[in-house]
Image (cartoon, rainbow, N blue to C red; front, side):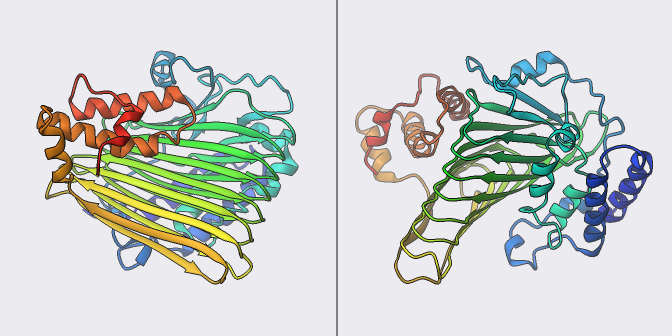
Length: 452
């Protein structure tokens, strides 16, 4: 039976709105009202839309997703959180359960009181000017059904505000938990992150789905980089066999700012990552990296846009994929160079290895250049492991299984070395090695020297 997700979620919003009409912040209520009206007037994308041709979200019609019945009370143990945090690294731990900020499970202790890491409820009271200035300004909901839907339910979320001239000494680890223990669940994580002038900090966002039922996570991030700021953002996706995940991340960079973003997708029934960054002033740098290693019938679609709006900016983009079994991946990377963006330097690459005849990749690198003094290039390759390289290793007494593992190891290593938290890098490598089923394999720089 086909499910009318749109009608059911609007009814859920009305019910929730009646319950919360006399509580919360008036600003968030108004934004929510406007967003649900926009959502009601919009249709979900389908395969007739070019950007969604290979990632048609038909799952919305197959499963009856509902809001959690008890959004603020979960049976999530501290022991479970301890299993998910990054070992041997001192981090601020922020836990979102089904999209809701959990102060009980979070451990946040910034040394400087001017730094704020907390919920929307506290943010709109303590930092109303900053919050109101940026919330929904990058992630515009008027023409996007998924952003509109997320905004309609975003009365709770995570706000990070780092004022000018300060920095967060240790990384912020955001744990997004989607708990479908009580039924098919839809959740709407929302984050607003503001990096003030001349600040530098690292964020790790890890996504997990727990429970035996289906889950749909619709996430939206807004990130603002002020003058001469740097944000390193690492996203790890390790969802379940019954998880559907759509993310929209909108970034705005000001003069001399730097964004280093790495997305690693290791598991998920359906993953769609939309990452857009606007280089809004001169001398900005953007580095986007991605690694997806999927098997079974998992699916990932990475859609990126790097918009060079001003001159003398640099961007690098490098996504790599390893696909096994019947896994399917999509990469669509667009670089836009506006007429005023002279002296732009931009590079984009997407490379994929198919381990079976049933694995599939659709890749589409794009360049839109409206300036004449630029250096831009892009490229994409897809294929199987190189037979000459396999022969080279086997001729030196290495088994076929080990040889394949070594080549995949080296292939993935280029992206993983972009991760600036060594313990996180080692943990991802460990998980990949487990997938390769080779006990005595490890990552090292020497492997990068294996001939192509």
